[in-house]
Image (tube, rainbow, N blue to C red; front, side):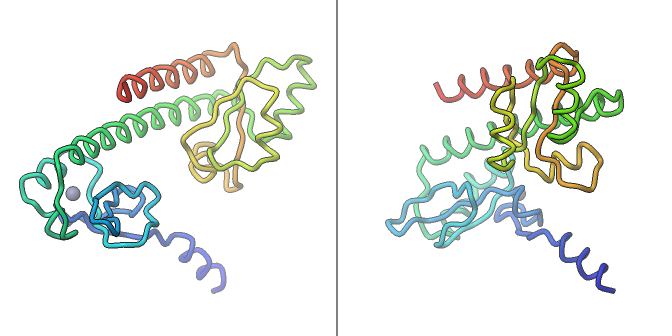
Amino acid sequence: MRFLKKDSKEKHIPQRSCAVCRVKNDKENLIRLVKSPDGRIFIDTEKKLPGRGVYICSDLECLERAKKSGIISHSLKAEVNNDFWLELEEYIKKSGSEKSVNLKIKSVLGLARKAGALLIGSERIENEIEKSGHKKILVILAENSSEGVKKFAASHEKILLDMTIKELSEVTGLRDSVQILALPLNSGFAKRIISLINKDTERSNAVER
Ligand SMILES: [Zn+2]
């Protein structure tokens, strides 16, 4: 009984509806738009700001419909100008490319795990370094990994992912929370991940320019 209760609590994910298509989705997959006290509309990236807000799908189709329908300015009782639409479009495109890079990284990590190349957790990584006598590994960290883990990673070639501990744990298929992974630096898996991240960085720089 107690276990069941705990389980159902853990699986509770807040849901919201898109103001445009009305489809329900996990709050974390939607974009929240909020009106500031001075009447300006902006993207509430942390989805925590007080004030009147609406949710919209992170997709260009709902964006186009929002522009035509005037639904955002109607629900927020505020003017939406063209600069804001452009900003929202860039934001949707950027989060789309981040998502697809994350999916690719996850699939590489999954393959590495199946191949037995993935080192999971700082203890395992430390053992491997000791055993092999060299430090040529690529350390991969969750975005919310602890300060201790970040310190451990500091002396290695490392990548901080846009993925949470929860997401990283799912990749490894373990129930425990996984904050840190590593791959041999000269492995194809590590090279693939480095190239995915580099490509993504180039693209987001291009968007900002
Ligand atoms: Zn929608």
